[in-house]
Length: 277
Length: 306
Image (cartoon, rainbow over all chains, first blue to last red):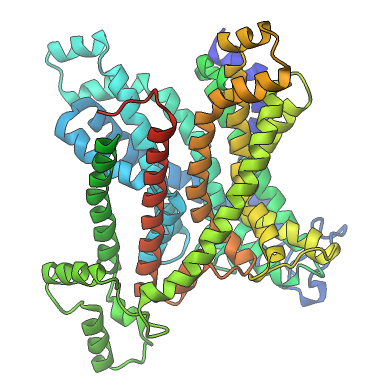
């Protein structure tokens, strides 16, 4: 059975993918889909519960929560995809080089990666934010840095095992340059674990971006962002819990979608991993 | 074993040096002049120069690095800009609070996670199995800070059972520990279940059953003891995770821990305090990892160390 068929049979994975697809469509279409201006204050509607005019209610400044949710989806999609792309672009070549050249190159790269992996990512992200400051671009940097060690380690491990294959040795014997061997012969064969890990990292990236923004270290208000929305509504949690609860549900669904789809991809691309769950 | 301990300790030295160097470099990586950033925009040139001198930024970097190491050996990383006291000494009481919270959360996650995992592994056809997988999935998907807020809404505001914040009583520890432990709870339950499922198919389990051992003994003595190693790994890993994850939880519950201390320092641009806090965090991870490796060597006689 092909990987694709296996994936389609996994109902949870398909549901997760549907969640992500909905999220991406809503995020990209946000400017045309928002019923109201996400930063339009209306103090008469302050902390108003969900109604026919405002499906998800209004926040502490009377802004439409649905519109802010859609605007926030855009921000978080941008940050998470940017961060994971950055991590893949930096981590995978490092891992390839370490696994291919071994010896001193490997010692240097793995040594650094191992040290960085000893710490939870949020610590690295905090350090980056402390140095460079807040905002969307800096969040991409902070969360990207956070995922580099994981991806480098994964790429190194896969390269180590693929690198000993006969076809790699054959192309080396034919005198091909290392860069070309890595690109043509190794990379395509280590791609599936990278895709799986990349999908799972997207879940972490969305969560981390929201967490940092919640702490006031990420996207700054009034720009709509889910974590920042939760932070600004906390003070009114007693009288208007909907303003806190709703963005959290959106956040959870997206993270859940990436996690389930990532697990499904792993199971369908590498069926031998299945028995572990 | 003795040789292994010594080797493992020696291995710490370069790692600690890398951490120290990164902490040192933090000030130099900041775009612009840290002294200028820390002070009011209206500060005079003399005030900026004085702060540069205090931070050691007016010296050649090599000499500054040596001095930084010297200070560190005497237990000091700069002076907090906000309090005027030693930044490291300022970070110690919050650090204790964080360790307290992290430990409570790991106990919660380990007890519940291992119990759920054993039960789901032993009765693999029961409803416990899908429940475990759901708990595991929700544990890694629900934003920690948001879960904390939900618990506050339900248990503090609606039911009035537990305090919504602060520290000092065991009641105040319950909600933050549950919030922080939820991630690890799911992971521990999932690993325990997987490990139990694997072990229950082993020959020695069949032998134990064949010789007529009661099922309770088979599961707890024969199967679980052998399934324990991955469970120990994941539990010690989750202590490290809890230390880091504490940042958001502490903010939600106004828990006076190190994570909140660092976030406050970042917002106030109190760089020496940020450096001291991150250093303390990093050091504690290294110690947790070291403890885990040594515990392994002691627990598992099958692992031999060169």
